[in-house]
Length: 377
Ligand SMILES: *Cc1c(COP(=O)(O)O)cnc(C)c1O
Image (cartoon, rainbow, N blue to C red; front, side, top):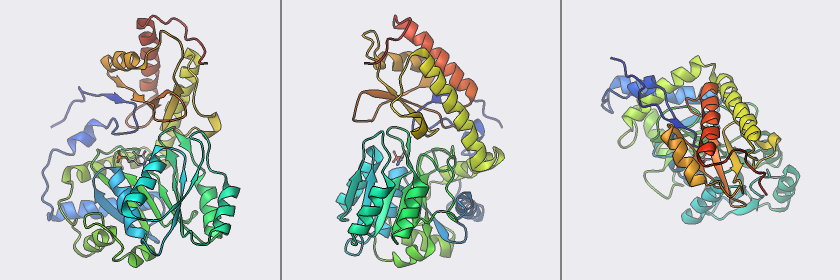
């Protein structure tokens, strides 16, 4: 049986994203959670995710049911003990602020170093903060802050954090599988991501690659039952099974998605296609007359934030629905500094889709009565 991809949507969003017909097709079988073949798939996924970040020797892969935020919350509340730990949160967007909220709700005392949404943290300021505040135990950062699409300098921050003898936790949700992270080169206690972004699986599970020694020490830390990754890993290591009902179809889809990731050339292959998508998109948007929120050097090939045109004939809601009619889904803006909208370049999207998107934008502007966009003021 083959599924025709007649309903292909071009989702240019931060996720969920466009997936292949074969990934969707892999979900047609119902698996029992104790089925030995399903147990083998679970084990295989854990090993493959570790291998993608070169973490097989040092880290353990914790899978967790739910969206990406569940994985972030599970990791932080498993690793950070309310009395013993005090993270410094590096924030430059909504996902950093979400980490702050997780800490607040869990009662984890924390400090914040916040920079504007178009600026990465300054490594020398971070160094000083760590030197002057001995109570800080961890540094937490978002790799690509999907709010704007900014690339944070994870390797430099990892180095300073390691030199200052602190632990490092990275929310790599929107970058894992496309922007490289090598755990033999950077020292990180945990890297967190999900199935449905650059890995091009379907939504429903997240994961964290956690230093084995940290996970052992985290026994009893958790403030919730279902998000306790120490127990999740312990149970999975002993039985091969998930604690509580596994998202069986999502797991099968991720297994297939990882095959396809492999076939594309792994992280470099996937990263290359996204970089081509992004380059085409950025060049094309600027040619049409749009202005971008980020400086070129800070733009990760994940999602692009477009400054809202001040042209009186331009209305984003209208563009959104005109594009939607053409099977292309754009995304509203999330930066707080100014009005904007976003266009993603990840998922099962190819340069020809980007070209089609640019043509559709040009056509939609025409439908809105705009022949030439006026400069954004
Ligand atoms: C998508 C994303 C998340 C998780 O969001 P969910 O909606 O819970 O899947 C977390 N951090 C970043 C940086 C993300 O891009």
